[in-house]
Image (cartoon, rainbow, N blue to C red; front, top):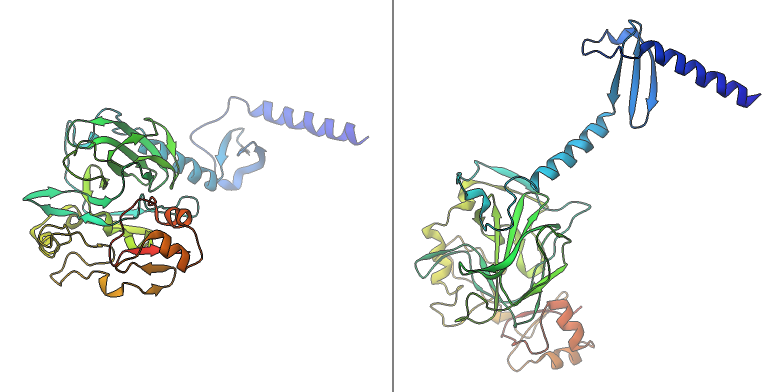
Length: 342
């Protein structure tokens, strides 16, 4: 009996729907003329008294579909696996007036590509613009993706980058990882934050020591990675950032931190750059005064320290210290260097 009742209801629905078939229109009656609303997959079919019908999609579904469409645009607009700066070819545009960028959310996080001494900051260097930060590392040290994204470029670059990987992220940012010894990812490959994408080296800059040249760009316009990264804590300063034209302009004010030795030019040695305000004229502080001290989960290297000695002191292993700090057992320690111990 129950089966018969359901069958009759189904046949009744088919009969009603057939009477409206072919009567969809862009000019719809008032909402008070609605006869019925019938669920149909992720949509609803609305039947009106005037023998017309229309599909109505839930607003949440519309919002979801728009987000998916916007994301797909990010990975199609100016998408080129062969050109380093696709937004500047063939028509370079000015930096945006201002742009709000969501850096991370509940689904997508951040991982510092490598923690080490910053040997050269963003800005003026030897009379030229340096559009990156250089992070000291040992040749062969793993380099990780900063955010989730899709590899746009992965090849040897003859313009000075050497082995270069460019990842475009879901927020539209692109990050550059240069001078790599090896590249583990290919163009159009999806990567996750923290995924090892290659190993550090000095390709394209053989006259220097091994280091990671790390850039952040928006539509090819470079800005200081330390604008968004709190280097010593290994995390972002905020979940989002508003970038303005001032962030994309490398001005003479950047010479302040060059002259204070951040780039290792005048002092003869590199200093730990994390946590310093590089846009003012105050002397750059180093961590040398904290050497031998423990602050939270971190220990500051003092004269004579070795990884094995630090490991013994804090009841851990050299391998664990290397894992926590993204270094190798042969890495050179510097006085004042911040070592994560747990």
